[in-house]
Image 1 (tube, chains in turn yellow, blue, green, orange):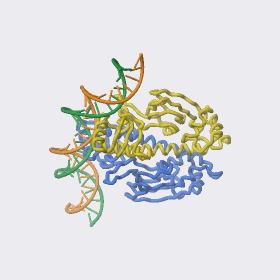
Image 2 (image 1 turned 45 degrees about the vertical axis):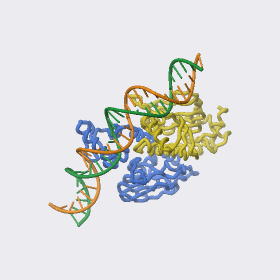
Image 3 (image 1 turned 120 degrees about the vertical axis):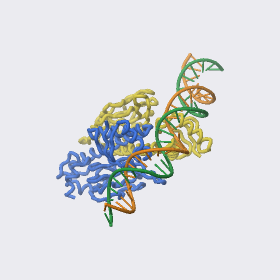
Image 4 (image 1 turned 135 degrees about the horizontal axis):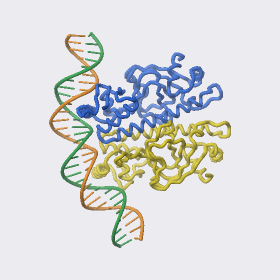
Length: 217
Length: 217
DNA sequence: CTCGTTTTGTTGGAAAAACAACATACTTAC
DNA sequence: GTAAGTATGTTGTTTTTCCAACAAAACGAG
């Protein structure tokens, strides 16, 4: 576990806390490390969770699939992000979490994280604060996605999403964490319509794209 | 403020804390009460907030309106719910919050709430915990809405939404917190299409509706 | 390199939603 | 009760998406 101190220090959960303090907390928080290979499921719809997870390496998708195989991708989680904290209110999780790259996940006992213990963990309060902000960010992200998919046309959704990605990247050129099918599932549109619309937009000179790489003009 | 102790005790933020303890905390948390009349805005897009709000009475809508007047209703907040906690990560709020009924709102200094103080507030930890769960619920609610509006057809969205409302009400008859236009703005569809679809569904015997009252069959 | 597989692009017809315009029902103030 | 204003329902047309099927390009294993 020591090996991962550096990674943990970079995560949102332990921001502002130095390695030695993290190490001291690991036991108290009942830390646990797991590896997942591409395509493997970390969490399945309907499960109840009592742990908080940090992605130390890799990439995950939070998604759900209905009876007919229609996939809905809620969000893509990248290294350093916290997840699972949104499902601690006792309700069953309604999504699957699946690794889309080989991933390393470190988890903690949620109760222990949320309860400030007597003495040992000086920085525990900071962890709770960080967790709170992570959850808050999560919320903002969901609202952002809601804004995207409540746009009426495929083009409007794309515009909204791509502008945001460009803004985030700080450059008109950027790479998205989705392939075409995944992007369609994220924006809740048909893959073929998405491809068609992207084709039109390229012809109109609005953007250029090759696979997951985009450049807005 | 004393007058509102009973109301506060019923809110999610102070769940499990008795009135005397709440009263003791009010000063520490820099509590503040405001009244809003129907149609009045509590918070406007772009503002930054450093307080946490509890709706003691009334009903609010969290919504945003674009340049052309297209309204998008994110959620409806009812008595006892906490709001504002999703925007403490420093980012500007991207919605308006507007009273749709005469409302009473009690607010607290966010920093004070999030920082356990020395001694006076024995139940402070519980408040933080409650806040966390409120935020977590908020998150679940957003994911639920995402699930609704990522359905492709107006009918599917309606089915999804109405089934949930029935389940929540524990009865096939229930009242929704929206009129037709608001429901359309919530589900991201056209009002006329919504009305038309509801008409069809009634003819097919799937449900009955009068204004905001619905009965599923 | 070659073959099989996966991803992406393209197209035309079917289905659905958006839009506009108007009819009807309900509410409110006077 | 009436008039004005608001909310809801209805209909026909236009626009967009969905769907299915196939073509082209990229990728991976041997």
